Length: 147
Image (tube, rainbow, N blue to C red; front, side):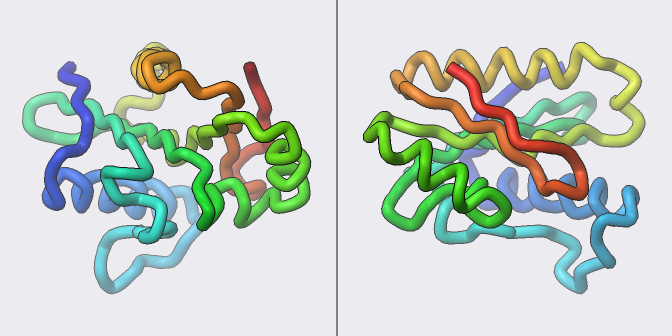
């Protein structure tokens, strides 16, 4: 398995396609005509987000995103605006870990999620974030705050 940061529009598109396909498969979303999900275009550029993906044999099988909290907000604001407002009161450097997704064929490999999280933590430490928020759609999970 090869872990890599998204560097090109093609790689970003493939990550968005994996996310789309996983949500459709889990019945959390209807098939989109574009075949991708670009939920937060204003937050997903390479300046505001680090997107890690893992490839196996030219197929993207997992991804995780780290977005810094900027004046436009963070992905967690969509579902947890009150919690994010509270966290921001500390004036810390905040990042939001989100879009944790693995291809269905790789879900039985618990270590893949663990490896994605380890990759994300390395970036978080390198960028010296003071607060980490891990948030997913409430239909898929729950709110977690760490650090």
